[in-house]
Image 1 (spheres, helix red, strand yellow):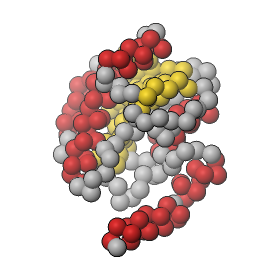
Image 2 (cartoon, rainbow, N blue to C red):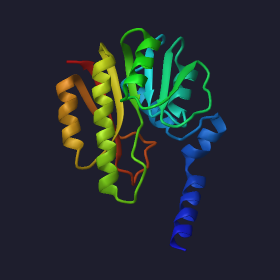
Image 3 (cartoon, rainbow, N blue to C red):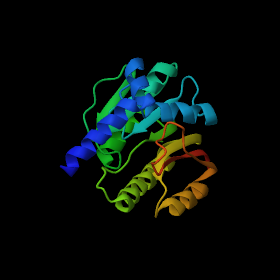
Image 4 (cartoon, rainbow, N blue to C red):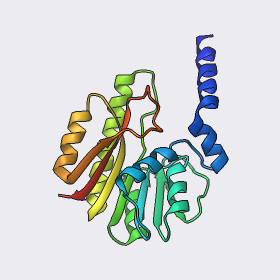
Length: 203
């Protein structure tokens, strides 16, 4: 009974959510696309002709945004889950930390890239501290990968949760990048601990 009530509450919130409604009208796969749009408006991280890796891309909203708004971009989307095709993107079903996936990524670009994006988060367990910890670990893995594959003037953007690993993530970012910002886009739900870390220029 309690589970059904939670499900109904979630459905009602989705119906009222302006970003959910807007994503359906504009043909995007998720409301998350507007978080990336707001990050771009504030930090100006994209330009035409860039090379971008979208980690944990499913269902594909961020890759859709890039495909629609960035001209001549070379976009690679990777996720453990299968995704529907997105125009002007190359997709990999796999784990970006594994050697086979890394080889596919490096072979596709033939060198280093301009931007690494990550909207990855833990599958929610109901334990907010545990979810925050796992999401933080995903962010740190993504940052390690970014350092390995980004150009010197590259940029890294990742979801983070305010929690036990936040200070560790921030310290690691400041060691690896010259400019680091924390930002909570207006599209992030007010009751969520979600923010994003925006890093520029490898140290």
